[in-house]
Image (cartoon, rainbow, N blue to C red; front, side, top):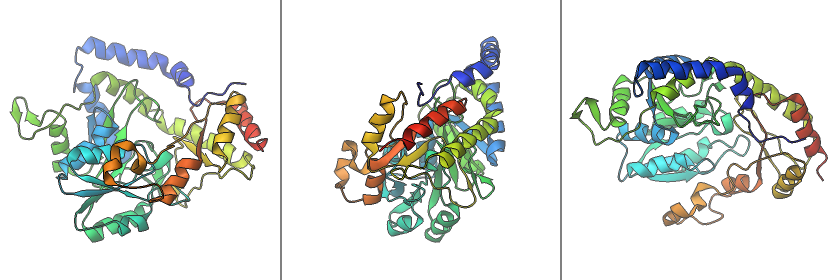
Length: 365
């Protein structure tokens, strides 16, 4: 049996007619940037996240960058970020002129450790970016009081966590702003690039919208040195179709994750930990093994595609070598990078495929 790491085919089969109809509607409208579909999606997604405002942008990196820029973060500032995440989180900080300060994860959840945040706070720290990694909510009940105590902004990175719940609240509803990616592989994915910021702060929302539109609050009137980052009309129309199905598709992922968690019994494999009060959406089902590379090869030999998120932590990437961080400086993040293995997880994955993966892992010695 062949098991892909991810597949869009089941989604495309179910939603294909609706997606084609959305395409035809936008094509007939002759409105391709910041039209009715984008306006409607922004309203619907803000309501879904439990926030007052949503601003569609070009991608998830821009969503973080524009949030930080709108908060006034720049040269001479520091922003605390996890090292075990996708590099976009750190790049957004760098693009503002600020310095990313890398912090260790909680080894149970792989999300940024609240104790580590406090350890890295200096008089230059302006913000912290908790990432809801793999679709697992970060510990916001502990992070928010730390930020408040030290007067820090909180920008949630929700790129992998559309619809995840933390103690009954959607992730993205805690910080000053929250950034989402709609890259096609996300739980809520467009058919191309896209992103959004959600917030309750109207002034901040207006600033983000202007910064993503050449710094313009209205045509030919530029109040900031902005850039071009807007969610296009076609992607907004596709996202509206898929947003209506998001909770159902997330429930499917939860069932597949439960099947993995109850079925995998190999002692060489550490299963994901779910903290009390958290409802992940399983963008990634991440296990760990000290024999990760051998296990990966073993699964590939059996026709199972697996992945690694992320095999090199950001603080050891060449592009950040000027920060002078050496191997061993963040041992927890480095251990996760060396042992993490992502199992196949996608909407429409059959029980037979899931069981085949489980049997393969249990037979690994």
